[in-house]
Image (cartoon, rainbow, N blue to C red):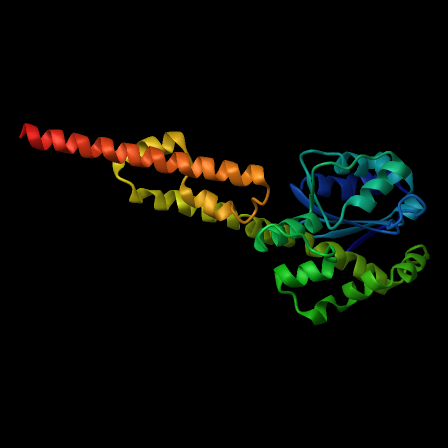
Length: 272
């Protein structure tokens, strides 16, 4: 853990920023921004491959962003992994005119995974970071106790985050809040790819058709398994009608081509 609380622009620009700029993916977190209109960004946490940087924004102020953080957060080449990016994005815009881009939001990804798993339903509430880490990374509850406490004690946490020097336990919790973000993103992506892999399998299973039939089907339509798989999402009348139309077209094309093949075989046999 590297705590950046020095007002020297040399330390900020040359040491931490250069290391972060080398990364393709970073984890990003914050303290003190749950209510970004009235709140104040106190800390900004950034996790790289091997380190976690804690930037004391309350002390550094706009200097931290002028000396490299703004460039990193607005970069389209560096992917920022955040759990619920709304508050931090609003705070950065309102307080420092920094527009964070190229974000992977783990809370949004968790909602999409739930939507896919349940056949199109949405959760009653969004998941907290400890809940998502526990679900996808299988991290033991004992190791997430401090994170759970962090999410529960919002007001108390804000009062401590503005204290200087900042209590060591809070520094450790802040680091922990971003350490899991990068591996969490990979697990969420794997889960989101489940539908894709099912549909790839339906392509592989299309080989049950005769060669001539398959050749035309590949040009004209999607496999029937596509629509069977996605039928769980299609609840509107328009989607249902479109589904029946495509399936019906697929079956008609298959039947007509089968008849053509039968006729060819008959002619061939007659010619012999």
